[in-house]
Length: 529
Ligand code: 9EZ
Image 1: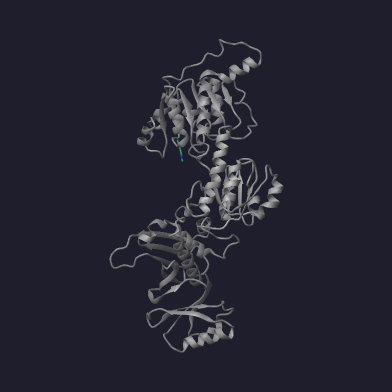
Image 2: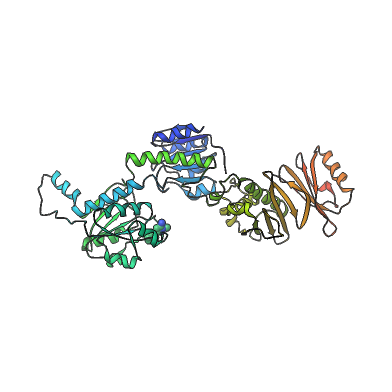
């Protein structure tokens, strides 16, 4: 899906390389260091793209005020400050830079582990207060201790390899990373049940999800060694804050390093002020190197996506992941065109409608579900207040109650190859369309089982009807069109099936009224592709 983005707004301080890379690729960039919400609301309509860090809250009202917005890019990991649902509904791609912060976040975590082992922040505060308290701050060595790493993605892995150099044993768990992969970076993989009781330190590196919210809670703290030290430099709430307070009060938890909070800034300072808790104001990604990398990454990712080269860091556009390859593009156009034809024949999408999309042949092997999503775009076009595209079509199709099934098969001998079949049924009608791509142009090969001897290009204004093969009908239709000032650009007929044939005409503009075509022109419908 290559598309045009001309003008970008950078609404806060993002590394200078971001603007430079966008401009080098022909995108106009306006950079404003710190915009107020009202300024953003007033100006966002002028832009195709918006780049933010964590200071800009891209709420639904901002998104609805944005008339041309196609991309929101966050220079950083996570998109907590963007309303993803509103973005998806408006067909706006949301992107982040999942890689740029990795080393900074991992180093921050390691620093927290060391500070917990040696109480450096507490010692420093004591000195600052004019004290000399050598007995109070007796620490522990990391050498020979066990570190539990919950979440073994990029950051968890970097924490593991760094702490191994201190002689720590690293054990871990992740639902996605296989045990053998964890072994390659020196982490002994195990179920959480086995992990909790072994750890001297536990650090979490997961996203915040229903399954990871409160991963450390009263129950799991109780399974830990007494005095376990815990670190959360990931997302606020993975360690339950109330349970953590109870655990540090009781001594079950010997200390906590927190860079993130459920509420930021935290209103309630009960944890922050506890003597065994060290905390920072979400500084994990706050290094010059990470900021630089994220600014560069977001610009590069956007340019790569716009040019159809690759898709990295997109959080809300499932169908796009297969839509990038240039060879896929005409198949997406075909999907949308078939959807438009089906809609013209079967009417507006509703909860009685069933659609099956079948792709056949190797050309479509890598198209994934994007052809089916393109069909949904065609089926929904014009029905909704929002512009429909590959980003929001499946959401809207779902909400309209459309039942869509898809399948792909490699071609078997004797059956057509590199084609897409669309079968649609409603309570009152059903149709089957067979389409393909010829010379990069979507074409219709077959309608309700009747083959066209010449493939019908699916473009322009099309008039479709069924009639008996009577030579009187074409001049009669031509006459109706001519009296409306419309010319016929091309004309295709299908084979005769049960005494009738499908006729598809490309015309210079659509008829205002189909009635004058008369009774011999059956089920006439028209559309523009
Ligand atoms: C969940 C996870 C890790 C985890 C990590 C990732 C989606 N997801 N979930 C429970 N990437 C540990 C415990």
